[in-house]
Amino acid sequence: MSGTIEQAFVKQFEAEVAEAYQRQGSKLRPTVRSKSGVKGASTIFPRVGKGTAAAKARNGVVPVMNLEYANAECFLQDYYAGEWIDRLDEIKTAIDERSVIANAGAYALGRKTDELIVAALDTATAEASGVGTGLADTDGLTKQKVLMAFEMLGAADVPDDGNRFAVVGWKQWSELLQIDEFARADYVGDDALPWKGTQAKRWLGALWMPHSGLTKAGVLRYCYFYHKTAIGHAVASEVVTDITWHGDRAAHFVNNMMSQGAVMIDPTGVVRMRAKE
Image (tube, helix red, strand yellow):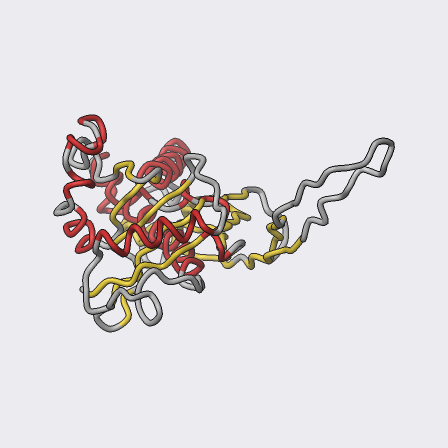
């Protein structure tokens, strides 16, 4: 019996893992500012403040904007998701079963990607619920909380350029479906109804989606309304797969791994909506 796995199997398995990660591994990565090919243990995301325009006298000096520059440093961590495949099981394993193992590793790393992004979102300071807002944490995700978050982003001059996103828990998604302005075609148009295709839709100039991995503190679920450039996600290594033979176990070890990190770049672009669950 051969002690090495066929190279064609290795290449196909690696391709399946990468494809699975790109397809369903992470829901939040496309909603944030992502940087690939990072070298080193950390990377910098620059943040530029708002400029001010001014008039100038004839033949006078052009006024400068006095932009404020700042940096957000993102530290990267290495993550792994491995699994043993018994050599005799390989003989009996169909391609569909191999895909299950590939998907499991990719999805595990995808959930870790989202976990990193959620941790960055959790450092937000702006609240559209709780003390000082007039909106009680004893309520779920109400239309009033959503509209306050919408107002707060607008008041902070966060661009309404199609790059706003909102992520909520599944309980809060159900609550949104009870809001006419969110769910009825009379308000949002037939092509934007949430039950068409995947559970995501556009509302208030943002793409809304449910997510099971948002932080829950006690009975409160933390939901977020944010702009894509407010959160940074860095990648030193995309998902890669290593397959090695271990004779003492008569099995191959499949190791899926990646190196990534996430950081808050601009807290003014994120508003937290706390909802009772």
